Length: 255
View 1 (cartoon, rainbow, N blue to C red):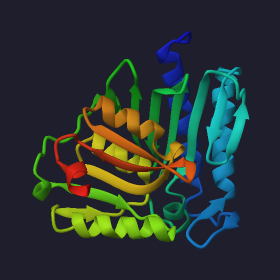
View 2 (tube, rainbow, N blue to C red):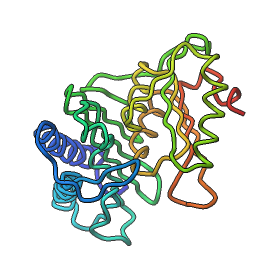
View 3 (tube, rainbow, N blue to C red):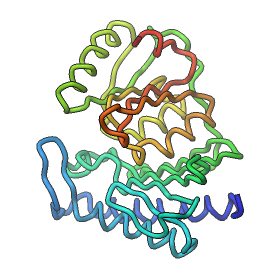
């Protein structure tokens, strides 16, 4: 890369923490709903958060591009593309559940090289770079050492499309008797940060988007874990994900 990793990581950290402060300040306020769906909600503060992030990143690197849940900005032809989820866990946020985060990743020539995940409610900041380790609040993190499924704590997410939901339910039937506990947390990025930190042993979901998991994937891999993504045949922007510490045999179980 032409630009220094530290410069890129500092900008990503500034963008994520400022956006986190913004959304945390709105948690107890009535929030303007831009769009309401059967199983999701889009808020005005989602857009505000992404605009803030874009302003910080493009202010530092005006030739870069932004790809986010709330749209694109900057130079779409640049080899540097920031992948942004301005609020991962929007439904949690909307209902006042304090489990959500900001996720910012940088891809250079389509390879993720920087990742930042910030949970403003507990002030936890995960940072990672391709050339460095994985950190939470400046201290190195690693995945858990657990190897037995019977000891594993696993987070799952359920897709809402009928065919994906059926697949999710089938997986749950296989998984539930085999592991210690299953949790549904509502934020893909935080689930991956928890795997990287050894709090969870695995995370699976049938339908995620690139902005949900770009930062988390690099974080888990640099913390010693594994991430398997399977693109959806009918939607190139959606993936199925199996993320783990690389020790519990969850992929073999789900086959």
